[in-house]
Amino acid sequence: MEAIKINRLTTIEEADLLDHKFSEQFIWYKQGEYFRKCLEENIAESRITLIAYYEDQLAGCCHLLFNSDYPFFRDNKIPEINDLNVFHEYRRRKIASTMFDELEAIVTTSSRYIGLGVGLSKDYGNAQRMYTTRGYMMDGNGMTYKNVQVEPGKSVMVDDDLIIYLIKDLKGKL
Image (cartoon, rainbow, N blue to C red; front, side, top):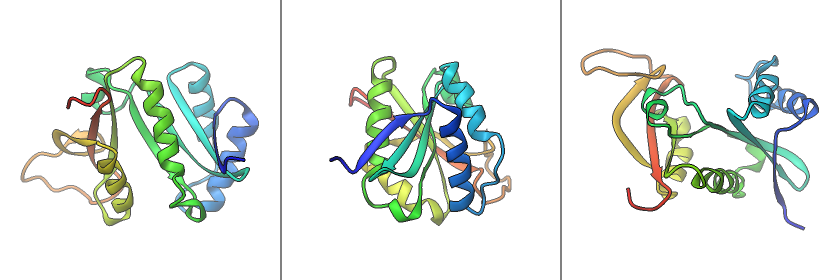
């Protein structure tokens, strides 16, 4: 039996399970309507939410946005991998990579490129290493804060909204 299983979000029960488990796992997450909204967007086909299970236990999730909030991706119709989260006890088991394999396979049928954003603080170090190992490269547009390009000489807060975006050529020619 395979330890990792990936399913798409399709039911209200799954959305509520994600909401409950995220509130248990992450102090920054507050229960609410987020995953129900994600379900609506999955049904509308503007988002794909993958749910990861490890040995039949919920281990995390990841999203693919077809209409990114990041202007460069939106303007160039580049789908964005978004909000990758694997629960602490399931990290280092290739769960994130398995979700990425699935999302990249989905996107390769409709787009040459896929992108993602990553925070710049040390908290994102493991993700930064994983993304570059998988062939993601900086998109060349510099840092953004709340999806607005940071201007030289301007101050911004170093928090989860300070992001650099990466892109991958799924045909391997970038």
